[in-house]
Length: 256
Image (tube, rainbow, N blue to C red; front, side, top):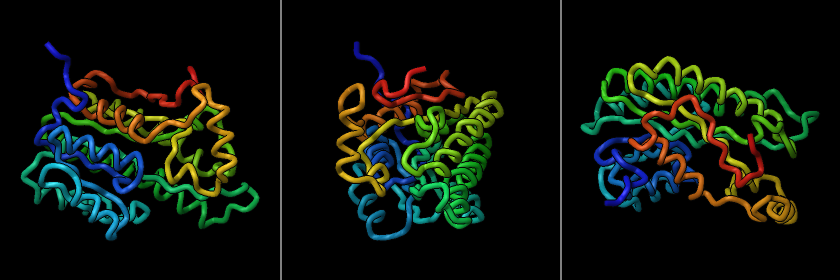
């Protein structure tokens, strides 16, 4: 007798994946599709997103091109998609984020607002509408948000505003976890460490990347699929009693 699959319970259910055309989001979307789930792939509109969705295994996946910084569009867009779909919404893996790496002295009002709008306000409004739809659906569901190990360790290399938003995501998720628990809906956070993604490389040199990998306990950076595996576990039936947790995926760079 074998144990349950990583994505147990996802077959025939829809999961929103934000940042779907990126590293971690892309791997999570691929895994969900391989498990028989339906992916509503949310990312900035364009050929990259459309091509990504076209290449997912299975059928019924949707490319949802939108900017999470336009927070007023989040609720009506998600509600319209849910209303037009014959597939029940089961949850969200919210991997999208915006990082503008700058020294605090150089941060502008626009830098601040752009990161807060995508990373914090966008998370709130996305979680709220998904939570409401899951309550109405009556079958339970899953919310998985993304923070960073820096929510606990503090910012490095000009990520002060980004990290401030990611610390707030941890607190925000706990609120949703508590309010939605009686409906069988879980809400959790993944806090990745140094993962080799496009965002990790924003304004970082190859020398910095190599030094960061060499300084890690495992002597390497994590891979997007190593984080995506955790995300898919959290939206599966396997994680039915895990809620309000912040899961550290950092290869022992952070321990608590």
